[in-house]
Length: 147
Image 1 (cartoon, rainbow, N blue to C red):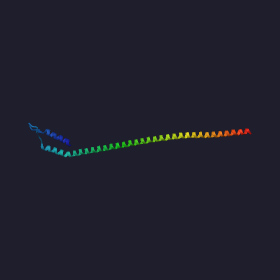
Image 2: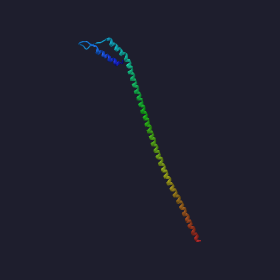
Image 3: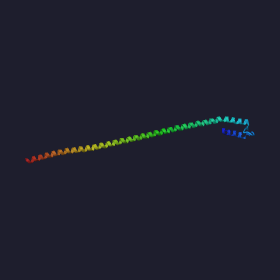
Image 4: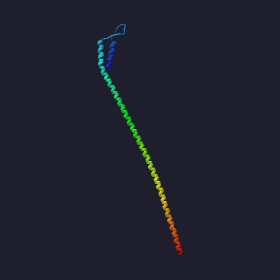
């Protein structure tokens, strides 16, 4: 029998006891009450041990849950930091790629302009040499006519 049932039985014994007329006192069987209280005393340590075990188990489960919650929060924080870092690395890579592309475009433009200027300069020099040759040819023809 567990302690609560023994206490219920104790109450029954008290309720069923014979009352003394004109008072609220009750006559009870001393040995029956002593036996019940002794059984309660015997059962109580087991109940207390079980309650203490339940309390300790509850504390252990709560501590375990708290640790697990902290671990999950820390893992989530690390994951978020990794995502932020990856995002930052991606952003920096995109910026660097844009810088390289812009630099390449500028270099290509400079090369095109340089090539045009070079070609124009070469054509100008050829044109001047051709003019000199034409002038020389004109002079030679004039000389031939005068002979």
